[in-house]
Length: 379
Image (tube, rainbow, N blue to C red; front, side, top):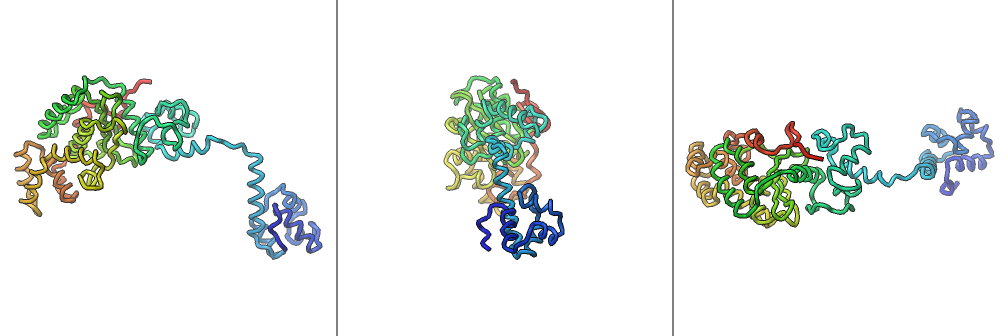
């Protein structure tokens, strides 16, 4: 029998009964079920089970999958008539599936204690992203863009960026000028000799008109720093300090300051993620603005020619006394020499004893969000 013309399993069963000349009562006896139960299945009032489909296969020689396929198609068609479409479901899938909502709630970024309260979470998200409707949040592909970011920016990075922007918008700093930033960089250079001196960084940057914010990274964001401008004379530098090391701190900070000096981040936010290894170099695959910032940052830590000469003289063995001697000569912390050696040689397992932690030194004098603290932000 051709079974492709039927729309429900009941229609197929009826046709098979007619072919055999059976009544539903006979089939009920053969199957070992009540006649009323069989009638409900044939009439579509009750769904056909997989067990019954197998029994029908034995009786009629029609594969069980055929009965089940008809049942599934019938159930779906019936559901389409009953279930009301929810245009917001796809939007919620993209927002809740993309943004780290639970972490944002935990960090105090969203005023929504219960992630299961969708309406409350959506209200908190519109406030956080400063939009009228949840459909306008930037993680959605068709949302009107409010912040110029690269296409490969992840939802977690975007959320982190908005938190930096939120905090920076309420900061009061001095008048910005490129000259002031250059002078600040000269001051910062004198601080690199001792780790404790890094506590002065936030004050020096504020005096130079740079809003400097420390925001702990979100899981999976792999973000190190960001440079953008609130206005043409209001640069912002955000850092995550996800690598709590003196060499990474000074490299990322000077990297972002070069973006400020070059005016990078005005047309498009500069988000620096995984700023180590190849991405910290000046190779042909590195974007031009990143190459410029990388060179400035590396030279700030240890002048390139000095590092070249040191490696040429000492490679492949770098004695402890040589690292300490070079640091003393350049008046920098040994961790900066160690960090550049690790980057140049690709041996990130070496010289770790010099890579002192820096976050607890900088954080007390900076505007901080994370690591147990929530930056106070107005409504």
